[in-house]
Amino acid sequence: MKHLLSAKDLSHDEAVMVLDTAEAMAATQRHAVKKLPTLRGKTVVNLFFEDSTRTRLSFEAAAKRLSADVINFSAKGSSVSKGESLKDTAQTIMAMGADAVVVRHSACGAAHLLAHAGWIDVPVLNAGDGTHQHPTQALLDAMTLRRWYTPGGPASGSARADDGGPAPRGRDLEGARVIIVGDVLHSRVARSNVDLLTTLGAHVTLVAPPTLLPVGMDDWPCDVSYDFDAAIAAVEPDAVMMLRVQRERMSAAGGGYFPSPGEYSRGYGLGAVRRAAMPEHAIVMHPGPMNRGLEITADAADDPRSRVVEQVGNGVSVRMAALYLLLADEGNQL
Ligand code: NCD
Image 1: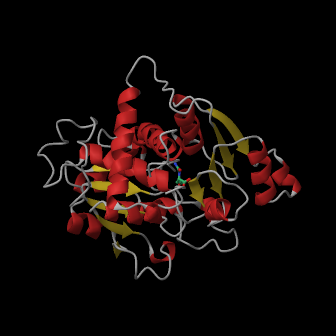
Image 2 (image 1 turned 60 degrees about the vertical axis):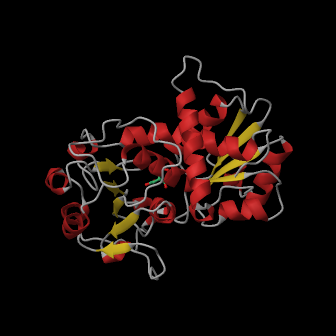
């Protein structure tokens, strides 16, 4: 694989290989000197046309930990605001000698276009395109789940004994039960996770109000429910992943996705009562940024079973793995 554009493109064995590589990268991050010489002399360009905190910072940290040079481009304050096209921006970046491009864009398909339009000839890593795909987010979520989840049933008590430690090589998520809740309609995180987690053997249930589900979900390999409480009882999840309500993608005129924030929270928010209804061992996940008080209460976000901060840390390891596998001198290994 030359590019990392969609979680759908990863086979089971490729996904496990990226996760194993991410664990190897994580191990190096516990050393006093975190830097590896692997990508010395290479330049990674971060092309961000949409806002980002975690993804941009962790791609930058990942590239730097591998000793690559990093050029950060953000559309705000650039010639994009003067009307420059994606093609001209890409070619400008290439003229500066990029060896890989990480791109986030509000348009679905932007990463694919950049990879295949013939404007540039280096690996493209999709850091989120519109509501479509966000493959490294799904990989970091899978890494977080894999670190905790034991196939064949959860350990008794609150968590596995080696909770937070590296997952055994070659492990997948066979049998894991994951509920993903909230604004599925606008969520590239949900789409990418349905693709990747099911490839790895997990069972995924999406929970959302009907207005926040896309049409034409018949071919999605997951269950769908409108009732969060019923889903918790029926699925007995190993993990509950909350999604941000993406107000910036809800047009001001269209407004009516849910009656009021309070009603959304009552139906689809995670707070103390639902957390208590989840199995004792289940973990809480959220890709961030969180709307505390809307889709998740502060209690649930800061609960000992919350893995939100761990997810961010795993994001650096997964992005190091992806850059390494696509760019290292040993040749493309994905
Ligand atoms: C997500 C994104 O940008 O798609 N965030 C992230 O990458 N950490 C989810 C979101 O913005 O809600």
